[in-house]
Image (cartoon, helix red, strand yellow):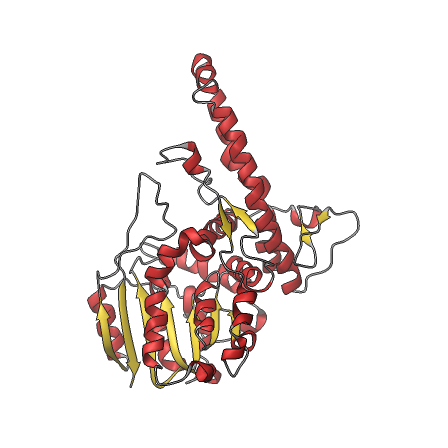
Length: 410
């Protein structure tokens, strides 16, 4: 079962992180000339002590990974823990797992990297310290929605259906829901689906977990304390926040939020989804397409006539330089991961499984959107600057100047 493979990689965050982050470094450290490693073991360097501190931080992050596994097991209705396996209870969900016999199979390196990156991304979506990136990326989208429906009282915005492809860890879905809309998040990554499910539905309080987002890398740190920075997540308890506004809306916020786990193009190009949504919002998403024409066609299919598509993001094409054979491997991998129902939908050449790929410029994307039945009503480029899971204390910083536009379906 593919979900068990994902849960296995998440459940093994602890031992995989200890092995790759600290164990290998200890081996390399002791391979130094003896006089060098002895010098660096003593003050003011204390390298071995610092690696011990990294191990302690890994344990804190692993508590979060264990929680994701717990809710994922319940979410996908997997078999209960069998006798003799080692499981520990974590508050707020039915049970949590630590690696037992069912969870110790080989881990796909790609899945393991996704497990690590998902934990790290919590910094951007669910910490107070990540608020600057959220303001840059989420606020313009929510503000554009509010501008579009300014004549609809907040209490009645539940009649407006918003689709969020590439919903990730669920923060944008939460913010749009909190603004009063009925929102459906869509995500293809099981790692992120499991994590978002936990953050939205199983956290018990703000600041529940300690997160050390920067321990996976050892480059460009000014100090070891910067590498070991701790933040608390979530910065807001989603259920409490949504419950607090329940009296302000005609439809309870809990009834206005849902998630789908599927390839965007396969699921939302279906006839059943035709003109199902008033608005589609895409944030750092369209460049995940091997064939962006499919994305544009899918948005057009599921958006009502006169509905708006609000987009914010760069064009860092994820499949740039991928060969057709590499794309075929990706397609085969996605076939394995999709449910039987998802696999029978659509053609072989859709979504991330499309064997072809193309990279367009910003001008070409805008021309494609207009040629596909949309009118561009607002377009700004280089107006917003933002990082993506950026460490403000790092000696190296990556900055995007994303495009922001609003298009209306004719």
